[in-house]
Image 1 (cartoon, rainbow, N blue to C red):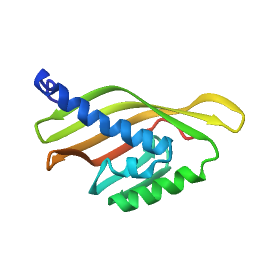
Image 2: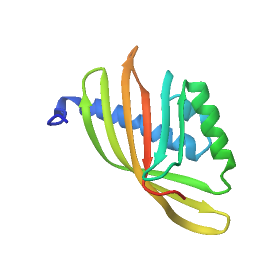
Image 3: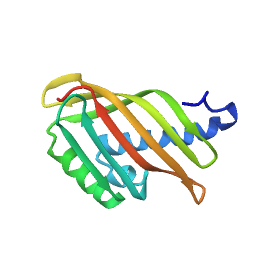
Image 4: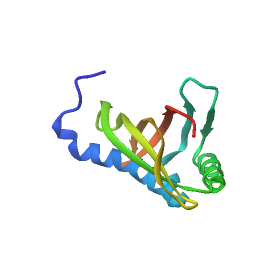
Length: 146
């Protein structure tokens, strides 16, 4: 890991983090065009639950990602809220970034009060193409099943 990016990339960091926020808002609000628009056409995603055999993906390509995540979301009777915190940029240049964030995943609905269902982290690799930042890879590791 490097000593971290310089202040010169402050606006760039905000643009990159916006991808994660748009991904989360898209999933949570069932706005699949918003969520899918954060990935490159050939992007990839998947995840695991730590210390288990539970996993999903990897899915390759924007259409497959949207299709698979949409199916998961539509199968959930509750509603989710992804809360992302503590971003750390492991790599950052004018055209490439690797960032880690903590995830707290909340659930609400079905008469239940909002509650934390699991925590974990995302690792995102993003690159700039034609002046636009998009995700190349989003990996998720959850700390427990729910």
